Length: 90
Image (tube, rainbow, N blue to C red; front, side):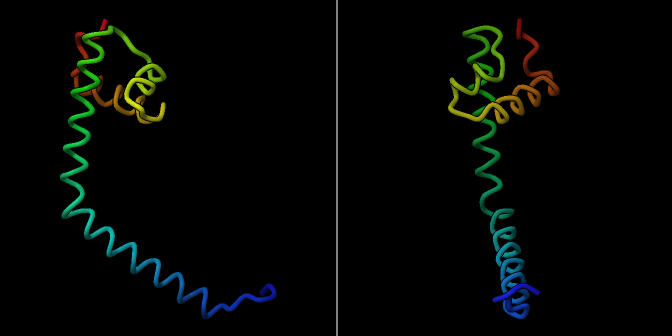
């Protein structure tokens, strides 16, 4: 192994991180997931309103209007299209 590397310490650090990850996952599932779902629903409604108001928007335009990443805007557009919630989209 390289100089200054303590395998025991590395293993303990990894075990600690796995434990912390499991703790966060249990909190996330029970407390944060409903909040995330509410937020996502609000975003979807806002996207639908923007498209009704401004017409067809690409992911870049939508990202700029909502303050999201382009990837996030692409996800929202794809999700809403798959669910048939953008049928009025010109």
